[in-house]
Length: 426
Image (cartoon, rainbow, N blue to C red; front, side, top):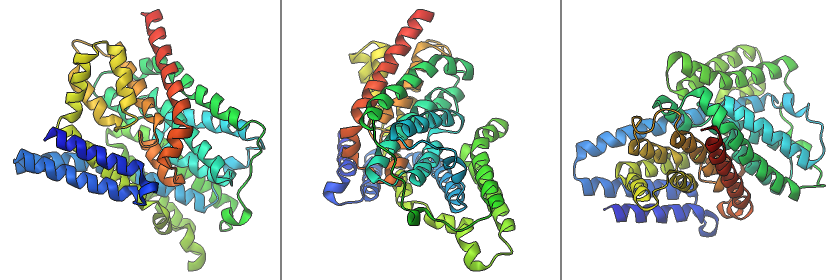
């Protein structure tokens, strides 16, 4: 049964990777793969009650991510409709692509640590769409955003779902993870920035045609109000989670409700033709539902692998075969470029206990770095990558050919720095 499930996942994964050559939308492949995996698993287990219970758990965890994504994407669309990103674009004066890439990279890196890598990716890609007209150039910027968002999310307990899992599980503490993982994460970004930025040396920014970015005329007050309220809503999500201990998606939906109410009040006296494009109802029609459906399919497929214990067995096999913790964690990080890092980290948390490895031990901090940044090596290896893939229509093989090399070098360099840093301090 396990071999069949693994084979089906590999075929579905290959279909996703070969989306453009096959001419089959990746969302269809993800949904078909998830359906087949759960069908095979249910028939092989034969315990309907157990499988349905596991399915309910998987749906609940998937729904949290999907609701968060819908809320964040809608907020970004509302800001965009009000020309809100002009608040940022108006202060960027550089005409050189290399300089802009470094600015975008560092802004994404630190913003991701405050928000989270998924939300930051959505916001920053929306931003570069207002600054860069060339599709080929924008793909490079979107790729740097993915790397920077994952690197920035790895060194805080709220920046990435895996670090949040380790924090909630008691494996890491907020201050120590920041001190230990910041430098490796920064290097993880700097090396791809140097390599990719060098290829853009001397190139000027080609802005989008005026007609493609011209939005409705809105008052300055309305633009600033919706920009700061929308961005403030996203920034407040970690605070909401810390105060209420509710899941982050609840904070995003709560903020979306506030933004919706404010928008209704601000535009209530306008004519319907003027008001409609500025409303949350219209923003909901503009979000990329195909990407959201893909997200549902791939997360449900990976959840089946988790319940079937395929990932746990893989992790145990690595322990028996490799032996060394540092090599195992590096390999798990590389594996997260192919398979979602959440179940990988969950399986690792189940393999090692806090008695054997207390909080802030080498293994937990190194897992936070490797699982958080390893997903950047391939475009479908992280939530940020999947979101960018949908927003900018990034092809799997284009990313693998142009970005995987620099991302891998940055990942390994950061890993070596963490190992050396830990050895020096302990």
